[in-house]
Image (cartoon, rainbow, N blue to C red; front, side, top):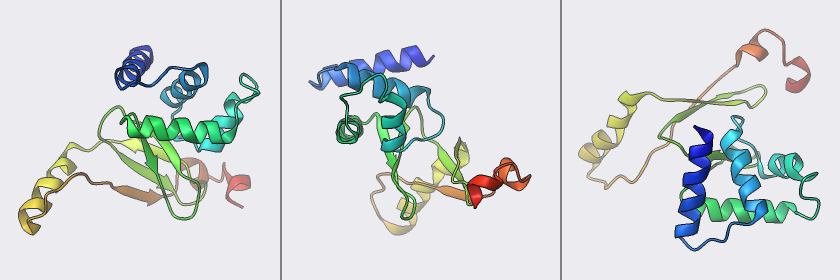
Length: 149
C-alpha cells in the first residue's frame, strides 16, 4: 500500500511542476513509512548518513513544498517543534502528555462537526482539527520513565 502512496505522491508533485530529487524522494518515503509524526530534525537525522550533504534547511524546504502540494500536514502543539504527518485520510490525533507520542485515530461521527458549526454560526467552514490528550500505555506502566523525566 505505501508504494502506491509514494507513487501517487510523486505523481502529484510532478504534475504541479516539482522536480523529484533523490532527497525529496527519500524525505517523502520516510514520511509515508513513519508512524511517529516526525519533526524536521528527526527526518534529517534519519537520512543524514544516506545524504551527508543534505542540511536541516533542505528538509524544512522540502516539507514546505510537500505541505503546499497538500501531501503533508504540519502539526503544531505548544512550544515544541512542528511535527509532520503524511496525509492519507481525515483523521485525529491522541497525544501523550508525558512522552509526546502521537497516534492517529479516525471517528467518522466527527465529520458532522463542520456541518453543525456552519449551520449554527453561518461560517463557511474550511476544516477542523481535534486533539485528544492523555497518557500512553508505555508511560502509564512506567515503561517510558526515562523519557518522561
